Image (cartoon, rainbow, N blue to C red; front, side):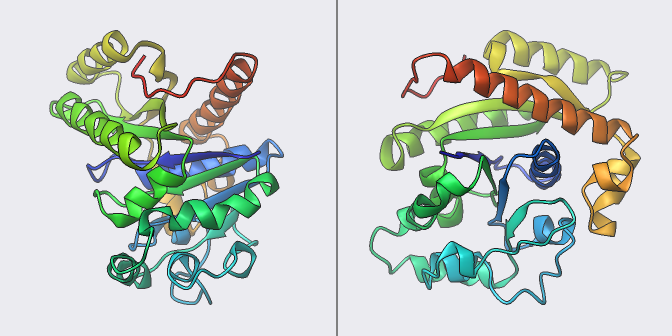
Length: 268
């Protein structure tokens, strides 16, 4: 059965969508079957996948509100080699429509259930806010991957996010876990970044990925070409970092599969 990972942070501009697109592409490059679900009405993950958000025949709106089967909504041709459920401004209306629906927080979980065996990994790019779309992602996910910058307010924001995830786990998904914390836009020359990084490792231990995503101009340029960075410039430090992250995630998954599964939300 495929693993479903929500990529979330209530703070915007932390590399959430960049991580969703490039991790999905890196996993697909390892011959895994990957689905990326764009739940952000901005549609940046859709555009970054080489798909025109203005031209797609269906989006996450049809999946969540109209309850169309996944195979009628998914885009199978992307620049990253993965399948995609696209998003555009229509998805904003989905949140409003879902408010009047019974079991509205379970729409995405129910939509994915018949298709989980078709994918090795399902990544969900969440909006940078706690709304019904994010709640749907948390209800459907096995775990949450948290991208964050090593900045002054990062630890306080991370603590608030952990509390939010814990509360959601208690209400909509008792098995929800923290998959890992990813340091993004990292500059090792910055003393504050190094200090925050050390605090993260002390507090969250092995939940912090060893892989660090650096500040990289190629990584920043790739979305404007509708391409994951590994296909825009495979020799760039950004491309190598996301491939390394995919490898680390796979090793962790292999390690956990040999252990008895846990069903509690933990930080370390």
